[in-house]
Amino acid sequence: MKFTKPHIYFWITAIIIFIAGLFTFSDKNALIDINVYDTYFIIHLFHLISLISLLYLIEGSIYWVLKKLNVCLINCLTKIHLFFTVGGLLVYFLLMIIFEDDTEVEPGVFNESSILGWVITVIICTILFSQILFILNIIFSTVKHFISNSKS
Image (tube, rainbow, N blue to C red; front, top):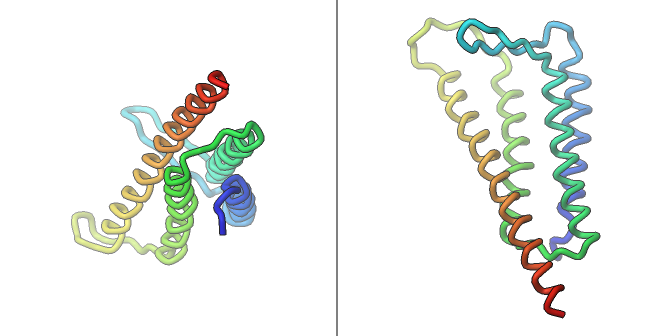
């Protein structure tokens, strides 16, 4: 089976993320607070899920536009980007479902939540690294495409 439509995977993932966020984080108390020095940024989780879903839609649209322009992407980089971006997010959500029942523990005590924090950090860094590969794939492929079109 030839791998030619990564945009479909991103669009389906975006729809699944949005629907899951619609049913899971529609509660008005589903908030994240981020403390930066003396300032607290409070973000509703549904807004965060909507943003992530929008980013996946945009990535899928970029793949679709490049396919319509007949830009031949580097297949290896496309597969790596797809695997880590879609797969990493699915693993993240699976971990959140598995470790959802988090109870209070004493600070400084070794527990599963500290391991979970490290695992989530690694997953998020991997997803962010794959976005760099996505950008490099687009740049190299479009430059190669325009160079080959200018020669002919």
